[in-house]
Image (cartoon, rainbow, N blue to C red; front, top):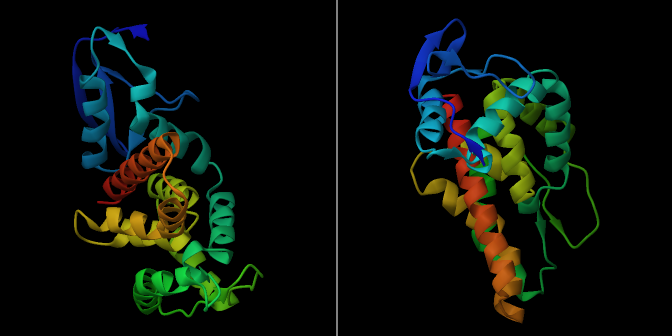
Length: 234
């Protein structure tokens, strides 16, 4: 915690976007760059974090600020590397890997994942390989090329959000669907679908209090990150 060093929080429109102003001074990233975001909505969300601070600033509560810093200092510097890493998630996407067909979990995966995956394929005009068991099978190169092209359309802020969501869900499909889907509850439904196997195991073997807390934190992280990414391209 550090002593609060500002009184007024404003959002200013500046060349290239929007920037939070603390007592008239523009916020900078950890790397020293001006923290300019592409949309007013994202700027307002960042300003709200600063307004919520009390007499002391809790850096751990400035989560959107940290994401904006990462987008500017890291993602914008090498968007191709971030996209490469995300395509690796597509190669082993959770929604494409199912249990053996005779296992009880398989029917639950089919019911929850197949409609999501089929809709995603239709929206992007691609076909993805479904895999039963643990053996890896590569995804078709044309499908990966389409996904790569979609990632290249994202600004660094939305791309940073998709990266974080994909890591949390072990699924690029889930991350892109959450970014693009309409409806307030849709990101939560997508997150819950991605966690189906984990929840199945918890129901089967019993729930642990610490594990439940970790799951709740990851869910909150996913939803917050989704909000960040969606605001970044609104």
